[in-house]
Length: 401
Image (cartoon, rainbow, N blue to C red; front, side, top):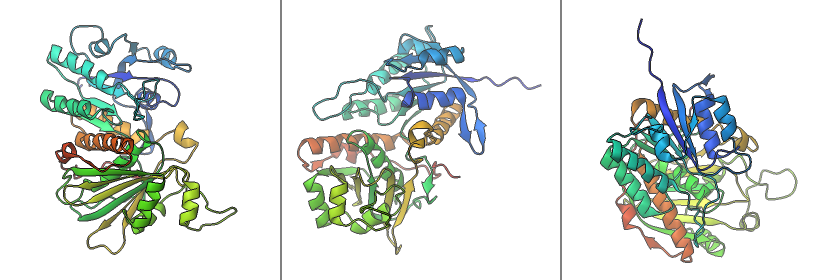
């Protein structure tokens, strides 16, 4: 009889563990399992320790500890990683620094303590001489210098490190991928949400596609942000492709009808202005000449839609990174399942499923865009992002049905 396979031990470090928080959506999947490939899948690992930074009304910590006695609440991050001892005692770490009452600076950035949490993990690694894979939910930090330090430390110490949101790995409609090595001429994402929040999702929608172009990611040399009337002036002048804007918009499942009653008409410019009271655009140039544009059009759509012009193709390549329609989006949030499955594979193999450099880039783009908006839309040179070059995984990781 073969020996019983050891189950991995996982530490969960979260800012909040309440209903519908990212902490709940992610950690619960490692505790309860999730739907995957036509069955309910239970990860081959146990969450054995939990650190919760804030416990607001509706906190689920006590309930989960009672229901899952293998999991122990720890007073510090270090103890969550060592299980109260002196040596690293876990095989993987979930770092979910999203949600909670944390300071917002004058630029409107929500200063979640992902960097601070990561540094406490690095301290344990340096003390014990051992490392464990880390998954960091969403961007690395609101502060570029801190994000770069996190990345550099992962390289220095050999930490398997993966980060980002569910957008690159969720379903796509239609189920298409950017051809590896394609000559991409321009790319656009039409989406919704706020600055320093859902804009990160839009940037990831773009980046997971354009990184597959010829030569991989070459870096970004400048970024310029537009909002309100500046947005409409740029739209009118053709700063971004009208054809790609319309191609992306036709993939949306949530376009607000521009006129009363049943209709399927495309909104004209006056209707767009009426529907989108606070439009925002991020336009940026990659070092190889590619221009990418992310358009936040809250009031018009509630999804994430991509379009690109590829050399040699007559019509744009376009798709939607599909999230279930409200209210299932917030309750079931099934798009967290492919994200957790990729994290699970990293814990099992010690190898990230996709490059953390993607998240380093989108972290830097988010911070640069916030800076540009804070400076009334000034075009900012980004020599630090010109240094972020990498190759994509040949195999795509989006969730196919």
